[in-house]
Length: 350
Length: 267
Image 1 (cartoon, rainbow over the protein chains, first blue to last red):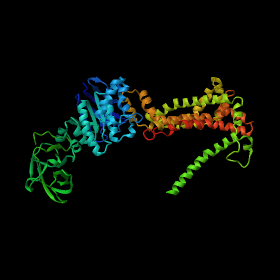
Image 2: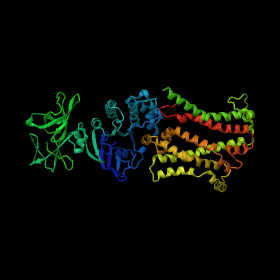
Image 3: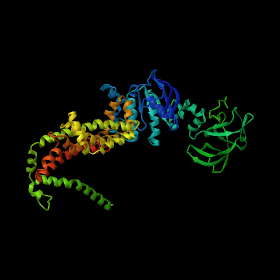
């Protein structure tokens, strides 16, 4: 069993608070993504779990064992670094075997596990080359193979795909998912790329300013953002927010009257693809500024109620700049937020 | 394009000449014998060469034992410089500690005191400590001379090696020491070789401290200083030539490590 319990971990650097009491439980075999903008503390949290950074308070348990005070080598985990950190003075074979060699595995086991890790990541033909002779994508594979060869209980990955070009990243993402599923390793994956987090993980923890904003399945995070930050960070385009006045328990959205929860000031959150074009008398007006054809759909940026709005429209629609269109939200897709706190307001099926 | 290439080539030629011509002239004096040394105008290609002068020089009483002392001192200096300088450089490169910048400056300050001023107190202290007239004592002084270079160069050397390499080694089962030996040191080897060479050459060439701090167990330079002062010119050339050769050979042997960069031009 390699479930991970992060028990009120906090970290300060001098006067800067990097992590503000983080609690997290990761199940055995689960793939969890730590998602957040740069500087949110996600890498710090990963490095604390790895033992490369010391927490200011709190503890980390893996499989029920407190590892907070142990050096990295005694924690029973493997890591893939952002810039791969593949040792340049060793052949690919020695790199992949490094972890096993350091823990004193016998030659037979070493050969077996290097072979299987190499086969899994398709680097068999390069085993006797040096990393300097490999491309970025190949080095990335070596780094993953090195981590998987030790058959770790826990695998930590720190933005492993961020140095690859877009096409390779897409390819590696799919491959990583199948490889890690086959290995069944508990994985914590740090990324700032929300499509990576959505595509790969069982659950996502969204971090912001040293705190966890929301933990949930990708669909949950996407459909029910707990805060305005999550809604604005996850999804491409990000969620639209309209701050609207509330009069007598309802909010007027163009021709639509929406029942509104009680709050001082309300913000309406709606995803661009949850807006549907409609007749003028059944929706709100939207002035198109820019239309970006994306092939499968067209992305419209424009103004509604003096707010910038992004709408995903069908590809056959070709509006011109300045054109006024009318939209209405799909039923049940509106998320109400409290403008003061930025926190979502629970509603019984809005 | 061709003009720039011409400038480049003539620059290279000048730099080569700058180092090679004096060595060639010294060599000429060493093998040419008394006539070549005294002849004017100088010829670059002597009509007759003989190793007689060199052989005569090497037969001079005490040259071989002084050479041995020199080698011993230089090797000790090299070892001390690496053993003291590399850890200090590593600490400067990897750890944030109070006064790191001041420490960096202080290291350079050790070169601010001329050995001439220190000579007498040093000699007295060394006599008290029982280090006087011993290779170990001279090696310690030479280490003091070579150490600032060793510390600062190794600091920038270790700084250039990404921390992630070490962290990866820790995660994959290495203790700090083992990670250093298995990952950092091999990567730093070319630079470490450069530091070693420099320490060796500094020690090999140093005359003053060696002359002050020894009487019977002189290094080659200190010994030649006293012996050659009374020798004819061509024997002096032979002595100079013998002094140059080991440094050149040593640098030649480790040049591969000096230029090798992992992944670009290894082997």
